[in-house]
Length: 279
Image (tube, rainbow, N blue to C red):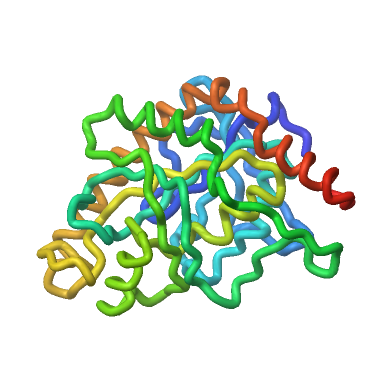
């Protein structure tokens, strides 16, 4: 891919509510195919707060792709193919803890995978790799996200364990209570295998999770029950506006974000130690 200007410094994967970046001054619309199929949509590349950014909506520009059908593998492969080595992602979540209130921003540092049947490795039919995920997200990227959130007028948690469910249905009360007993703080449908694919490709990856409601195992007036949908949507729209502001702050910090090469170094070192061809 030849760009009119330099390659994008960072990629933004927009979750629910973030299907476009209104402030992005687009210079290239990249339609790409990968060995793993097409990504969720056209990658929009341009200037945001004076920095080069690539944007890809996880669920498509019209939000038509459900969580279990998102082409996670193609999305990360496409972003890397145009030069992206650092990804900021957004997602919406439900809270498993009374103290994590709707409207809060959470910067997860761990995940629990409760999905099934999702294609979750690039190394199908190649030499087996047991890749470590003890530190599930790039600490450098997480720290910058946390710093920028702290400067905003929002409630926040700079750590948290996200339980990733298959979707598209929501949890039962029994499942929700079980997730909390497991140590989960928030619940979501898209964090796995997205963050793992980033690790496999040597991409530094961090996510900002915005809480729209309490999960059904937490007694509350704001949950995904029929009678409280309007209240949840109000929180969702407020969170979306704040998330767009946060993305602009992070774009301004993109040079600092790209100082980190931990994922690239980690994967190279791991393959070398394991005597594995990383191609």
